[in-house]
Length: 229
Image (cartoon, rainbow, N blue to C red):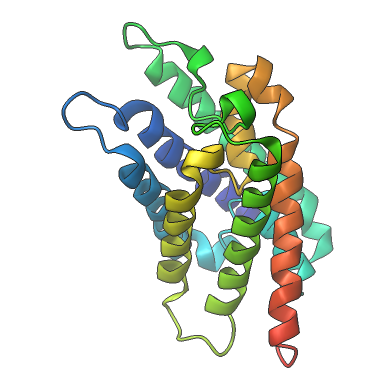
């Protein structure tokens, strides 16, 4: 139960920190942090939580990561569903807090997306469904590849959170224009449920693509490191 609680709180922090930076600070007049700041914010949430709850739960914060670690032989199947439930609930609570804060400002319009992920007309750059699907699969695959390598037995001890946090930052720098960057079904769900409409209708892609990518990343890691899981 402590591990599930840690995943709940950790995912809450990821969504509040990452999506909160996008909604509240990205375009703030005169000092908005923009794409670069939002990318860094997501990376920092993972880095800080990895050092905080890594020893308790492994700091997955992401259903796709949990599935990928299972596919890579690093996680028990019996814990998958409880982890995913905890992550999604933490994300929705963060979405609730973010919505409550954001709606306190004049002119707030939740229909603008509240950092939701999307494709087509709802992609920041107008990218197609196919482009969004490929982006999410590839980005998540390499995220898992890095996670498995950085946290492996042969990796330098204590540096995994830095590598993983920087990897997530890089992923956002690449893919925010395409999908607003998910690589995390819980993160996508946590804000989509408040936007409704198109955000919920397109949510399927941000479950299917990250999970498929995570499994591919795990398979790739095992292929080049078949002497170690």
